[in-house]
Amino acid sequence: MKKLIIINGPNLNLLGKREPAIYGSHTFTEFLDEIKTKYHNVTIDYFQSNIEGELIDKLQEVGFSYDGIVLNAAAYTHTSIGMGDAVKAIETPVVEVHISNTFNREEFRHQSYISPNSRGVILGFGLQSYELAIQSFLI
Ligand code: DQA
Image (cartoon, rainbow, N blue to C red; front, side, top):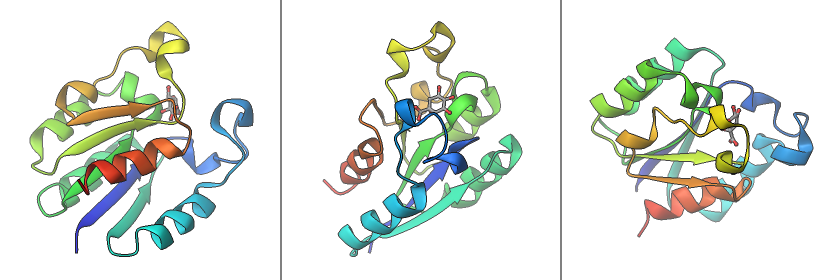
């Protein structure tokens, strides 16, 4: 059984309440339940933190044993050399995801420290971005 983990960065615990015009009105818990049911033959773990160091700790913890990491580093995508270095340091492939299309938003969202070290990037498809990333580990 493949072992995947979704790692969500800062403010993504507020999905459903946070700027629904951009991020939708589903909570992540609802979405995760659906996805776990749909992909019941895959282990899909989940971790969310608003704290940069905790996200780095989690990448290091899972990054030598899991089959894939789906990472939405949220705002740290655009600022965190430390998270970029962690993605580079680990062996497990990372697919970077974003709910919104960061390229049709503010200029500061166009920069990513995660992308250069990721297997691929999926953005702009709402919560479906996560599902597409999961599928990418199953083909
Ligand atoms: C985001 C995009 C980021 O720019 C933003 O800081 C987020 C969410 C997205 O999923 O669209 O918090 O990663």
